[in-house]
Image (cartoon, rainbow, N blue to C red; front, side, top):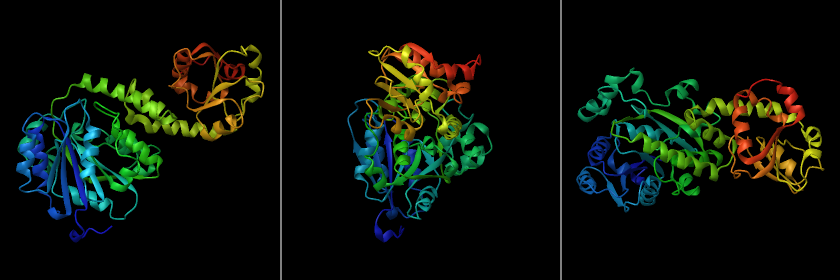
Amino acid sequence: MSISPGNGPQLSVIIPTFNRSDLLRQTLGNLARQRMPTEMFEVIVADDGSSDDTRAVVTEAAKALPVRYHFQPDEGFRAGAARNAGARLATAPILVFLDTGALVGPDFLDCHLAEHDAGDRTAVVGYAYGYDLAETTPGLAAAAAEALPEQVVARFQGVASFADDRQPQLVACDFDLGQLAAPWVLFWTLNCSLRADDFWRLGGFDEDFRGWGLEDLELAYRLFNDGVGFRLARQAWVVHAPHGRDRDAILADCMRNLRRLLVKHPEPPIEIVWRLMQRASPLDLEVSYQFLLSWADRARGIDVADELAREVSRLDPAGRTVVVGAGNRVPPTLPAAILLDFDADLLAEATSATSHVGHHAIGLRTLLEDGAADTVLLTSRLVGLWPRWGRALLTEAHRIGRSVRLTDAFAEQIGDSPPG
């Protein structure tokens, strides 16, 4: 990819905003300090219905920056729609998404562009100092308001709470996202970039995600499944300027969007995200997902057709049956059922040329309605998952089924071991 200024803007920086004109002024002021020539980038402020002096701040910034402004009416938190609208105005081949209040150093855009210089299909994850919903670094707010971002980084470097909230996951993979089975969970629109053609080929952000959170994770999941790689750019950092947040409202928004995410992608990785968000953080996805992938590989040879055949006589032929852990083969005597398995290839075999319906799922959280089945059968293909997720599997089984039963073979294998 050429970075010659004669080719027009190489980067379009898209900043959604809502009633944060003071922080926006700082963000735009730092973009005006870029060492990159201004003809090589453009800035688009996508206003989600502000009622303060945001438009005036953009007008003032246009004296030093190539900046455009888009306004959409205030119809609630619609950051995804604002980002899409900003991207429609973009003319550069690379889109950089940046939050209001994400303060950048003078080499920020050069560092993002360098990650795309090879021309490969890459989504770039930028580092975010000071971003932690649970904790604010003492003294950071005052420093961010008074000092240059690079001075703030120099001052707080080494303070634990100043590190990116994703730091433990980044350290675990030695800052190489290519080592991860689920790098997409670390892609946050606070600071990221990707090719415009990749963005639009997948339709941009899903605008049904309203309120705070998860629309970036959902886009990243689609990018990953489309073959886009993920790379960390530690030098393309931002300092997240602390500002007031309603954490209860954020959590409520996240849980609503989590339901949307599961409906759109009812697949094992998203089931795990759902499970994690009930008690922890989706950032812990990698360990759990690697655990599932490891067990799926070991379990490929576990055939449960015989153990299911022994259960058929206990089933009501007219009833609705769900099998969790169906594998690649079920007995021909099994009445039409809903088959779940964490291995998509095996599930496709089990449902091929049959009346059974397949769901690629672990069984932690499905889209089946409460009481959708008369009987839910859990098979021995779940034995390796039992120590970690047994309790969750039983909870979901009891939600969707009036009767829940472990096959005899499964019950014999786990004995009296309590579910995890």
